[in-house]
Length: 475
Image (cartoon, rainbow, N blue to C red; front, side, top):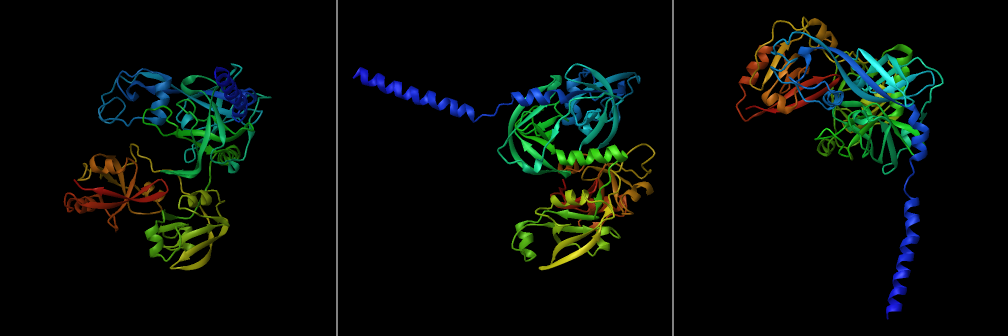
């Protein structure tokens, strides 16, 4: 009996040992990737000269990792704290703020890709290579909309990365990141592709690659590799409640990044195609009301007066299903395909209008400049105290109206209370209330004051080049 039992145990152990190599053989080996591609990944150190009264919190240490954390995954400022409105002057002493990021070399003569937020407002950019050499870098240009920046160091015969094709990525595929999380240079982490073509709120121009690769502050701007050792993405964002990795990381596809870098290298700025429309997601209920069988397409919620879309015959209520030969599956597809179109180009646009298919010919315009800025001397003296929903508003200056193509609107100077809870923030422009166009601060506040507590109002907001309705419950 004992002999038979021992024989059975031997057989089981033999099967287990035989299976182990097979299981291990299915796991990826990143050692070659790390050895070959690691030297092309750089550490980027940013120095910004600030005044003492710009510190976000009193007594906060000038720690580079904290600075990176607050800079990217930051905490909103509070009135009365140094550097915030209403804060006392701390004597105006200057100090150097430092933050860290990552990047990677794309040409042997020293061009490096990183994130725009990494080098934002930098007075000095220092690049450290894996062989410990350090170079001061020149900022060639940056694009905040895609969060891509191009910098250059004066060096030759540098190691460079190989560029891959992110369109071939599949969910479940292994990928790896190399960067400097919390300043720990040339750290490699690995995981799988969780999703592709991911649209994020207020990020209309990037079809993000979502992974579960461990990305932390300091990884920003570093490369995402496939198993062939090719860069497929630029690590840019994480979703986190703790400030550290929670398995939700987002990377900018490398083809988007290279397209931006080529423009920055040749002209120092970015030009994008523009239609002049407001879009919203096509829900099942809306699709049924339009007599559609599915929810594919981008619903046009509004059309700019005298904009490219209006001139081309596009109307509110149209559903764009194809743009310049490229399918538009969801609303978030449209800004990307339009943005990548050269301004001045005439394209075919397929639409559904009241159940009928139409093809329009539209000449694409050039996207207006960046968001409206709030600065001293840029805001007229019509600012008032916060209203019933917590918004402090101001009329637009002629320069600000020009950026909105002459539209009427009210600039949000501060947002608290119900407005802030609903997501309205400083720098937004209020265009309307309950389908009524805004004319003045007084008119808007009178309309708000007439709304009973507990009722919900729909506020039309412009943020950058996007327009959206924000429901706010009046308290």
